[in-house]
Length: 253
Image 1 (cartoon, one colour):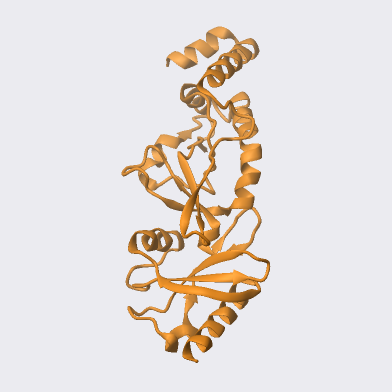
Image 2 (tube, helix red, strand yellow; image 1 turned 180 degrees about the horizontal axis):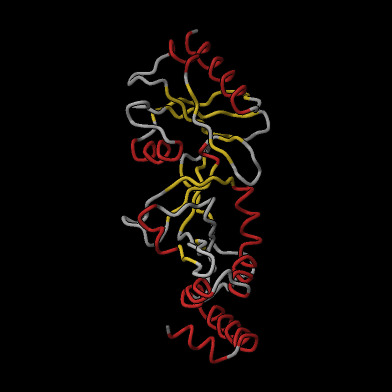
């Protein structure tokens, strides 16, 4: 009876918090500390405030299975505390939906140690797929129409970018920010350079494992050979438009 009451309370709280129709609660379990640390960091919770995170798997009326995360500020959450549980709320800055953090894509940078250091993005899979479709054209425009010469030089020397990037959805950690910022000397404005992610993943509540998510931008070369051919053509176009001596000088600096 207590179990039934507890699951009913959880269904009601999840439904009201996330505006979803919960059909049933699958299971409730403690989140392992490695994953809990990623979740706390994403929403700005301290270990003292949330010593234990609970994973609540919900079966929704639309046939989706979603894992939600909650805490009550004690080390031993119980049925008595279910009505006061606070759920972690994520957000997709593309679709403007409030989601469970499990529905947000996680990412890791190749140049952050230890690798992979996983971080929670501010983008859902739907928003992520939209970005995959348009970000390669964003990069092409950035290098064809740079904000300043300093940014253009860095973009040229960095070369082809074919993996997902976005400074707002996939923020660069503080210790690496300097590598991806350049100052426009004429205006004093700081220009953010692309910082491609190396890997992305999404939690699968049904299998209780992560699904790998492709980072390959739509329209970008798919093999090393294609990448070499594309970059050679792209540099030839830039030299035609801006002058070969100018581009060569930029690449040598």
